[in-house]
Image 1 (cartoon, rainbow, N blue to C red):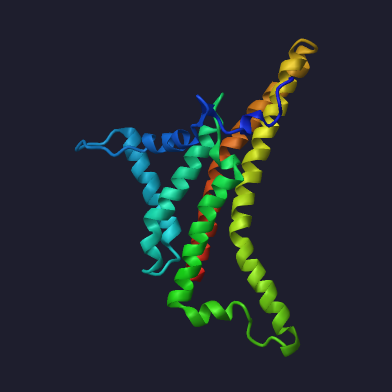
Image 2: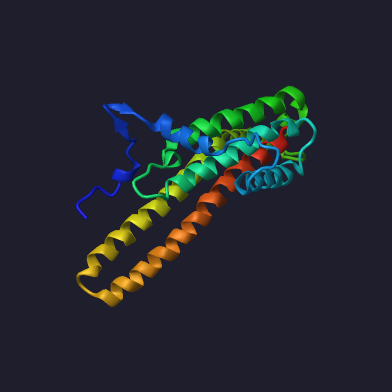
Length: 226
């Protein structure tokens, strides 16, 4: 219990060098392609999942937006796998780092916005000033809409960071409490352990839901600009 509460969020190092790059690459190594004529169950499930995600994501997009299909599918698979990786004991979750999430959110948001200004300039500029706005409110609305536009990538990154970090902290606190209660009261420790098990199952769901929400919001930003 003397361990620092945020110790699990510190970037791991080996021989003084950060190994976060190797950790980020690990989930992608699990997504292998099959060279066999008949795929095994893992590859069949992987292909079915990718097709399902692509169908759901690309349903609302124009042909120009569908060119991002590979990017969006890769994004949701990467975030989902890294979130699940962090639930294993003695592992590190890259998505608990705000810098990592900003590194994903800003380029994708910027690419969607630039695409909108390039191909739909009038429509993109119209978002800054809704039709029928009183003249006296025009400067204020332009400022508000500009701020809301630039806040989008920060909101994406903070939402993912906060949800994953909060879940890990809860598991850490309840796990520590269960360990202490084991020597004090066995029935209470049993109840706490059941709560911990249920919370862990919930965190598995949250890990996948947050990956879906992050990718869905990027997809909606893309839809608004294509």
